[in-house]
Each structure stands twice: as structure tokens, then as C-alpha cells.
Length: 130
Image 1 (cartoon, rainbow, N blue to C red):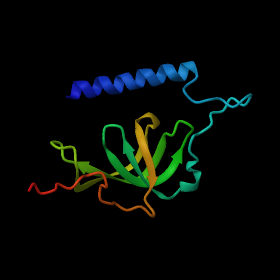
Image 2 (image 1 turned 45 degrees about the horizontal axis):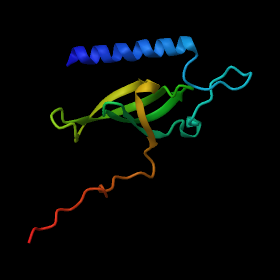
Image 3 (image 1 turned 180 degrees about the horizontal axis):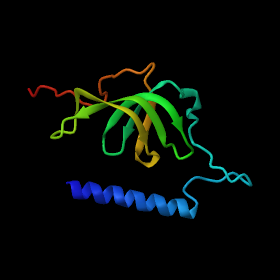
Image 4 (image 1 turned 60 degrees about the horizontal axis):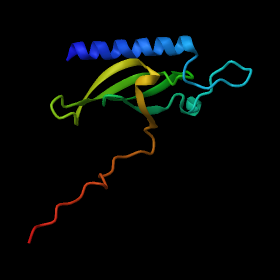
């Protein structure tokens, strides 16, 4: 299991390294040489965000910085722990403090203000068999 994770992160590192050498995935502005960001996270500076990662981990923290590759720096980070057997979230959390989240590993970024959990509308209720 640990060997797989090592090779996975090594592969991600190598791919990102060569993408940086080749000019990356982002489109360049004509004549400017700067990357355009897909999201403008500036309006969320100092605000609480929920970040979900590829692989299922999830954290909440205060946005302190970001770049064009959507690498984000969060402070006062709390990770919502998962059950290792079922990969479902538990009520347990752990404090991580200051965290740098690599853009390629980030799946979703959402503000925590104004959001709340709802029931899954796609789960079909079992009908009694008559």
C-alpha cells in the first residue's frame, strides 16, 4: 500500500516536472507570458474554504494564498477523517495548521459560508415487495 502511494506521488512529481519544462497545461496570454487562472480565488482571501482532494481526503481552512496553478495555502486547517475500511467520512477530525495544497491534487474548492449538507437525492428508497 505504501509502495503504491510512493510510486503514485513520484509519478505525479515527474509528470508535473516535465509539464513545467514543456510550458505547462495552462494557456498563455498572447504576448504576456503569464498564466491565466481558471478561478479567481482573490475574493476568498481570508475566508474559510473546503478543499477536497483526489483520493478522497477533505480539509477546511482559511485561504492565505494561491497561484495560477491553483496551488493553495490554507491556515488553521482541520482534516475530516475517513474510515479506512469503508472510505466514508467520520465525525473525527484532526488539526493540521498551515497546509500547502498542490493544485493537481485538488479536486474541488468551495467556500464554507452558505453551504450545508443535504440528503442524497439520487438514492432510491426501497419499495416494499407485495
